[in-house]
Length: 419
Ligand SMILES: Nc1ncnc2c1ncn2[C@@H]1O[C@H](COP(=O)(O)OP(=O)(O)OP(=O)(O)O)[C@@H](O)[C@H]1O
Image (cartoon, rainbow, N blue to C red; front, side, top):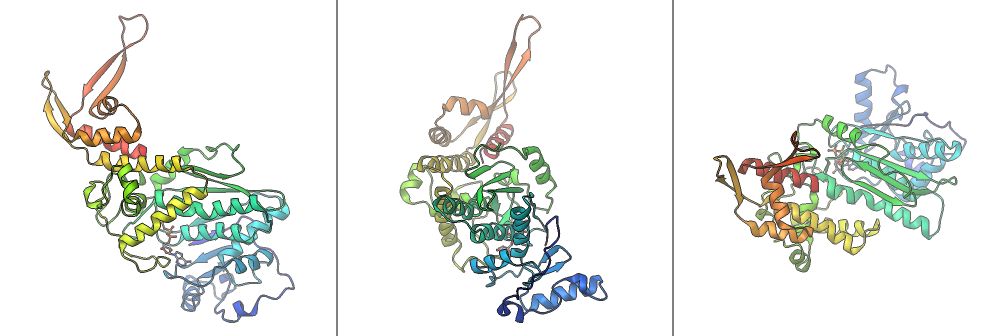
């Protein structure tokens, strides 16, 4: 995985690095110093360092990171503060050095900074981005209740986006299924004012910059990015209704079923058993590579994550009513997935369908506070306005009944749009 900032690094200063961190270093910190610099020497330097748990190595002003797939004791607020004040080559290569370098350019020269994280699925991009946010939340100097509240929100956006946008795939048990663009704004003193996350569907804004246009990055860009995220697994959009064998739907569905208390489940008209929902083919959370999650049973893990998601929703500013509304939408998607269509014949000989378990539909309408005939009509028929040449103004509405398989597709599209 590679990181880079546009400007390169700060020069050395006379301050000595903390001996504790540097003494155990091995290999070349910066691969450009290798002689000869070849693919072979580059890889063996990474391997040499990796064996000693030095997962970060520079190559010029790019940071290379190798995923250790286990927790390393190399991230702390104290270390983040050390990297904030030192130049990148004074301390061993680290993601905090990239964040620190970008931060100093931003604060000292008032120039916008961008950190690009790239790598294949499971290489640690989400983790790296989380560490950059952790750096900003831990190492920026200002104090005060307003700033603390923004820092708290920053710490919670990761878990929240993971719950709604990540899923277990064959490569990564916490794979991000949406491209994200995280924009953090700072004041002239270098303290965070707020953050702005844009992805395909979810625009989440925290902090004081609520007058920013939430769509500045445009959904088309993200959609295009998503379409190109070809790693063999299902596209994010279709995952809600179909998952590849061995993969899961988005975490929030399992978290809600397993983690909600009886009262909430009742309110959401849900049953705890994940097997009851046709959109949740694979319910087990197999531990492929999750160093930060303790070895718990899959159910316990989803349960713990649900508490974390709920807390994150509260922390970023959702009211209890809004949180309930979010869960109602999640529940509606699950329940819509269970709606079954039976083929029927229309009077004109065309194929139509009826809903066999309309109680599910009634409950969905109850959750979404909508009229059931409207929902039923929307998923079992197609309405088209066509211009009527004989009418002076306006057009004629043509309603066509959908077949059972068309209605299923229509239901799935609705679920994808809701999620
Ligand atoms: N530096 C690290 N230290 C410890 N574990 C890590 C580190 N980087 C990544 N991991 C772990 O490896 C797994 C995969 O990482 P992550 O989800 O960040 O990959 P990704 O590149 O974002 O994948 P995707 O593109 O599928 O979303 C996660 O369980 C994560 O916790």
